[in-house]
Image (cartoon, rainbow, N blue to C red; front, side, top):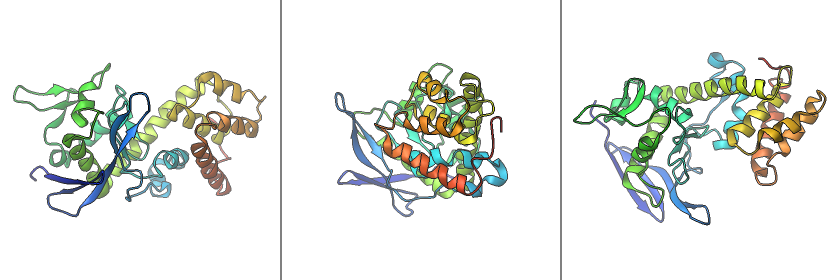
Length: 288
């Protein structure tokens, strides 16, 4: 199939796009971020779209499909098309908000997997995998856009600057959104990447915070703090110092960052309680 053609328009700071003259959809709204040196980009947190339902993925991923659910609800309300392009990551996408600025991070691993899909050439005909890296196809051959130490070239490919909303930024965002909405495989890769990330992270957290034998909801609270970055290791270790009282440890962990991020910690607690009531959480202890 030929490469997809994106057209877009802007009105009142709202960007809408169409691929191959198909139905128009909202890409995002222009927003400013920060105070001292504000940046500008897109956000689509209010845009409708397909949502993550752990029951749809439990057959493949088991308990882990539910373990990530409170965090993805807090990150994006479970929206597979969730996007922001206004902060230091330059480009953040997916239901768990994979950020492009981290070398070998979740966004990079996600994009590598996407580029293995047959549809990749339709959406991003100038990108390919070369020696296991995301690369751009040029007349002189493939040029890597990411390495073990930097993703700067990938970031600026997706979003040239965070000083304004550029055409390349809108077009690339529209491609990711359209692909996520029209491909179950794309959504499955989001989930696969997220669960693999949490599984690997939990192995590390278990050693760092001595989580052996701790209840699943305690582990989930630790993982969410680290995923968002709202607390230090010292904060986590202090919260866990409860002589094995997991309920107290869970409540302590919820207090980390709660003054600034109350909406998020309330969301995590609400979704954890639902999963406990359903008999999904509150049953397992690490390792699980």
